[in-house]
Image (cartoon, rainbow, N blue to C red; front, side):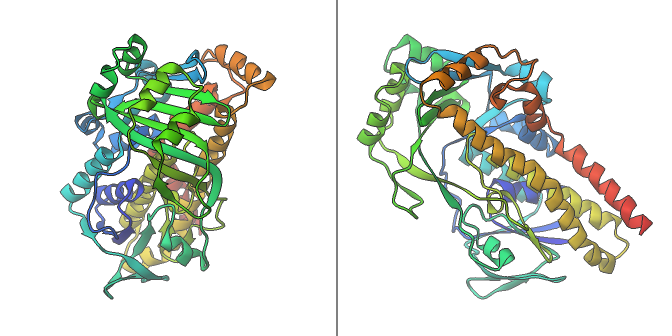
Length: 431
């Protein structure tokens, strides 16, 4: 089976590895002329670590600069007081099966690229797809006029997906949420130069820190083996409508958080340049599949980054699609039968992933409410509920609800996919 994957992001690369693991022929088309080390930190929750372990890459994570998070701390914005601690390390593995990592996005992407190349994928840079045809023999047309055919085409081209418009038959841009993020990374040396015991404690604990405040929140954690740190500051959007990113004003950024925890303000002061990034999401699409073409990741279910699951869901998507295509390829008696089965297999992929990713999209929106709650009676009730979290009993806030988190972080996507495929095979056999 020949699979063309449009897009070289984390979801597309995961799909490529999953397909290659199944013995399929993979071509990846990336419109950028080269892969640049852009981006900042990214979190790899246990459900995504499970997939990387399945690919045989978990050991390589730490060699690529990933850090196993010890704890995740919620803090009050004004004074840094700890409101709740999500235990990491061994407790994370006990509860969810696998560790929780943080890593620089570029290091994560490079790890996956090295793996797809090692397994023999055809990765083509500067290959922009301008058109796609559907049906049993789908094709893509590149900007240079070249036409490529495959058995299945996967649209993994991100938030501003061109293939999404092709599948839907009309423009469908993502919607602005009213939030934006400042993102940046800086060195350990910059922070050590403060000679501040509170800042030193924060940078030496291998933990993720999240400050919550009215209309805003901040996330901070180490990357690249602890030699660098990632800081993301979330606040109301003030970019012009339609603007995706823009260079930020450092003084504006600092003043936005000038009444926050003094230790956090010191960390923020290290950022001498900053990028503004508009946050967008999308209501659930009616379809992710048309003919032998399927979408994955942010091309079909972008979410707010308030649950640290957006990339993980894309990685799961790719894993599921590869397993389904590989098993369909092996269990079809000939090429004609395979072509007949593929639309049903892609529908199966869509049905599996829609319910799962909807949980993330809705959960991210609920976390926004918790993170950005204004001071007052409701905020005090929130803080009291978080202070009582035991990681054994339910909590009204999903961030502290062990049952919800086990479904989100402990989900075995490989086992579930194979189970559903076996049911599909049994259903087809009866017909």
